Image 1: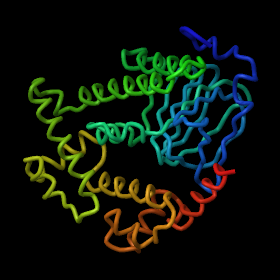
Image 2: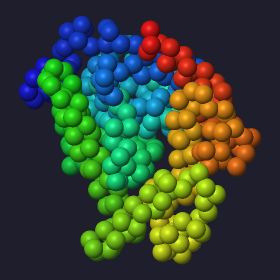
Image 3: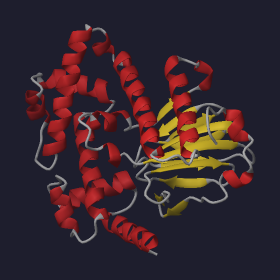
Length: 314
């Protein structure tokens, strides 16, 4: 489909253009996202009424019902998505899905890895570290931007044009930029500062995230990282929570778990080596933390990754 599209266009697609060729593959609590060949993006016009128990995947997922409703539970919070509502589910986030007997949903799944070399990538991880819900009834500037980018991604994905994935990630970056600007406006302390001071604080946090990104395997402390940002410990702790929505130590733990996932996926590393290389002081702490966040042990995760690799090789 070429040119501008509307939600009505998607609703009236023939069944052959929707979910007939795609099914979710969930083993245990992990979903294996089956991207098209040489792609890191999957778009799905979903009409199925099948429910999915609590699971997670390495992709960011964006859901927008274009006809009817959809029930999603993420981080133990129930979301009722009505027509036009948008929910962004972070990579690695446990969530469950409950579909009505009828309805159409536009679902986009994409990897963040193509963006990982960008200077502000740690900020992007923060923006997408917890579920984000946007109601169609609000019709504010941010919602309209998100909706338009969703439809633009759909249009480009189905266009068959060369270099379409570049255009799709351009839309994803536009979406993320708007989320970031909205986050600054919603941050009470930052919003009260002058534009110059806001930029100064943002640059300081960029320095912090870059520092964490290169030193997470070391025994970092709140006090030490606050010194890197030239803040007092207490001021830094408060700002960090406002800016990210999580505590410093929760963010550090999440970064370490993400690194552990990368190492476990690249088979061949002993679990103890993965634990230490990811910044955990002991294998017991690593196993306990991994199981708490991923609902499976590191060993089980390895087995799922091997099974996934075998599937792709076939």
